[in-house]
Image (cartoon, rainbow, N blue to C red; front, side, top):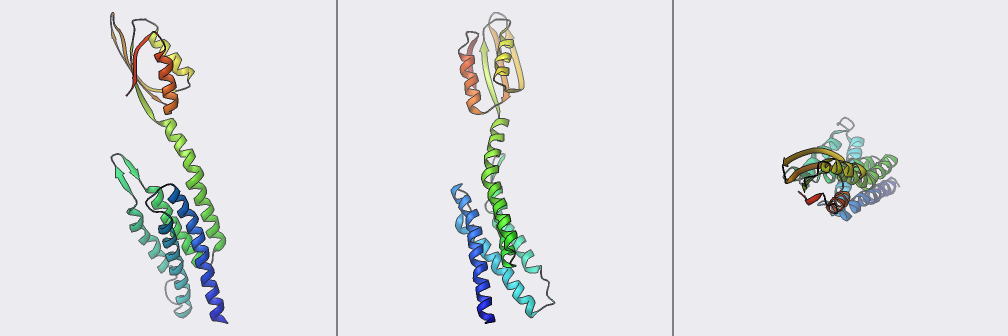
Length: 219
């Protein structure tokens, strides 16, 4: 009877682990990340097995350190997570996937110790962060992206005021503006501003339609 109960508990833990890890893995798979469905399931199942085995050994050897196995999982997953991190110039890719692998291993430990409520809540929080926060993060990045515009204008005195006014009407933030004026020719402007690409293109189109602007391009 004890063997049957023990087996049922073990099967339940593995099934729950596969479901929870699989949900996070599916999100990573759809996002086309290097560590997807299979990797996340293997990590969560491995962590669950380690924790379940740790609890079983505690019943036989009560004097062993109960946190030793779990600590090895958490530290060991760092090697796997490091393999997902790629540096391309100033940009680093894969940090979120590495963090999701680390989180999945912690979820596996929670399942292995029968902390099902904690494991489910952690999974839901992880999915919210990966899916919803990702959209918000992309919007913030788009708004904070600095774009440089190069303009050549006619010799009108009010041309810089006109450019300023047009940018303000678009509610865009100017980061830097440098101007070079040549008598009889006009201004050469380099404007750095924070804007999404579609808003920058809308600004360029409006400025290009003005007779004051002789040439404009995005740098």
